[in-house]
Length: 117
Image (cartoon, rainbow, N blue to C red; front, side, top):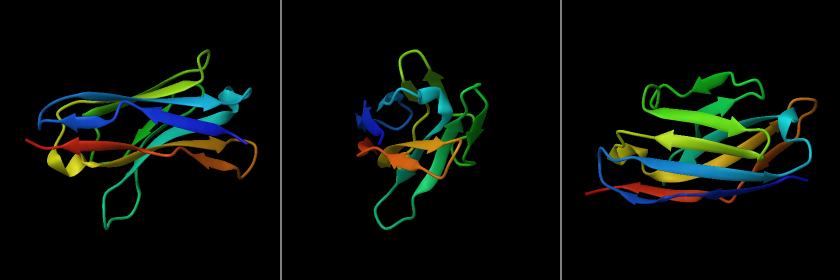
């Protein structure tokens, strides 16, 4: 079992920036593809970004050029740097871990991001 804990959410004005962090409780952090997903009320959960242990990144089209995902394999953390935030970025953001040698998938509890003036 892997526990994922997100932090850094909050209220920010349009055009502002926010950095989310996720800490994973596992001894094999490097064996997971890490990711961030988000879900707004009444909408499906969507991909924000993923990152492999070697640093290969993948982003959803709606956040490309504005969000950056990163990971620190020594600290068991994955971060999401968000800039130029828009009201439509408002959602609960979830940390995700996908085991590369199986079908195990883990989710954090989520952290709320609200972009509003």
